[in-house]
Length: 316
Image 1 (cartoon, rainbow, N blue to C red):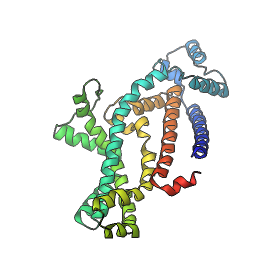
Image 2 (image 1 turned 60 degrees about the vertical axis):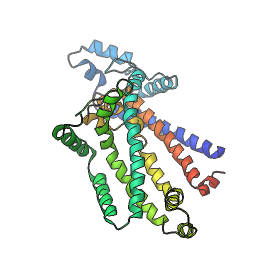
Image 3 (image 1 turned 180 degrees about the vertical axis):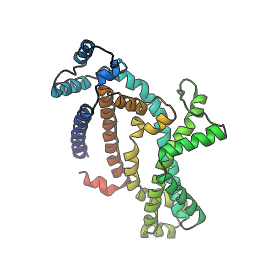
Image 4 (image 1 turned 60 degrees about the horizontal axis):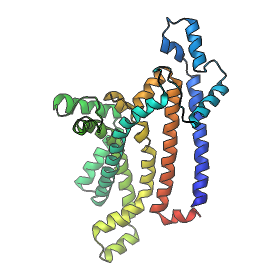
């Protein structure tokens, strides 16, 4: 177990390093001058040069990368060119907004997706299976922005039961938070629910026809115990992989959802920073999101061993 974690930890550090180099290089390759965008075309060249020196943009790229990494190690994310604020403070103010939507959306997706997957596998060939599978296919194939716009049109404009946009912190007013968060969370979850349901159904159909399931039924085990304790547990590994790949939305947010519903989260901050070439915000957001993704993937690998003892034996 210890050697497995050590190997995975070293690999994770390598991945984070490569992502940092990629994010840093990509932002400097893109056209556009962040200082000119921030100051405007009317700014004098002297003022532009002062800003370049202030943000070390007049130094070689290797020196800029070294300064950025050394600052990140100390917890200093740098100063935003666009907002003229500390990047760490900006991210800290946006992260709770993204978490308040991403965490409920992920929980909803996992619970509903697994239940629908088990239900369609048990009711294979019935109208329930056909109806849920058809909805899952629609959910997978429909673009997220279209789902969000349709939700606004139906529940906000026609039925007038939910607000069109905005966000209220749950610590400020929990009732208003629920009112404004229901539609974004559900829209964010639709595609993920569909993917989990389809994958769970496929794996469950393979497992429930195996000998150990027939043996459990012959021994008189309750059907619920057979399905959820034995069949679902053996069908979970591919589903865990999918869940792990989508966990990034908890921190990275859904850019489309935040833009459509005018939610001031990490995704909206990242998109505006990319548009305005605010290097330090983009680099910090990408690095933090990649770091969280790597950690979550490590947790997924550990979950494999918890679910399947054969994988756990291979760690030693």
